[in-house]
Length: 231
Image 1 (cartoon, rainbow, N blue to C red):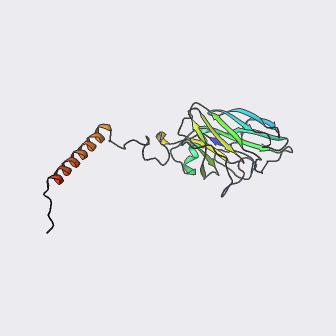
Image 2: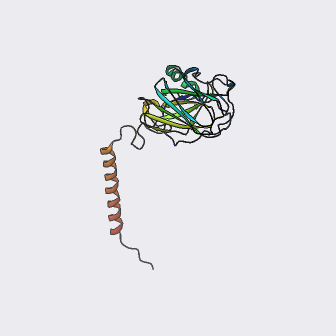
Image 3: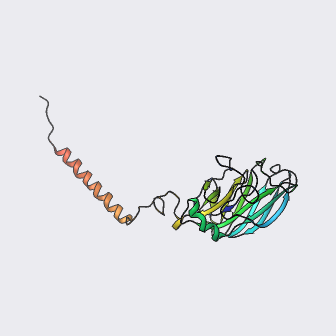
């Protein structure tokens, strides 16, 4: 399953990890039998990367991408192609994959072809690292694996200001996206850990002070009650 990996930089942070085959996991991208949101058909760079490994870089919409294949990860004579997709097109389609209101910071695809020009549909022999850098990428954004034109799955990744990194062992398509208002997905507010709505520090402090005073009064009343003697 080594073909196209489409990457769009988006919303929530995670730890870098290798992508593993799972339910519905299949080669995606041009010529791999599956169509994903955005297509990722615009080739921006290509290079032959064999068993000795190598690095391929390219400029995509929203930033720059570097793909690092270690020694032994790809078969001899493999051609590694970097692609990109329209940020506007991918953003417009995020509603269809279950992420309404999200926006895209950058897009990337990685396609691996065999020496005879056919698409490589096998797992990599080792993990390949994909690094995307761009001004719109910020900590808290997330990488989505684009499974089709109507489905996407959050993918473990490391996202910091200006940089997103993911490790792949096959060819899923990815989208790295930003949540509405910068909110962390599934968080109750845009600022995780803060009081929602109109609550602020002064209001919370007043509530806590009032509660403490009530507790003190109750404790004093209990101490003043006469003890009941057993008969």
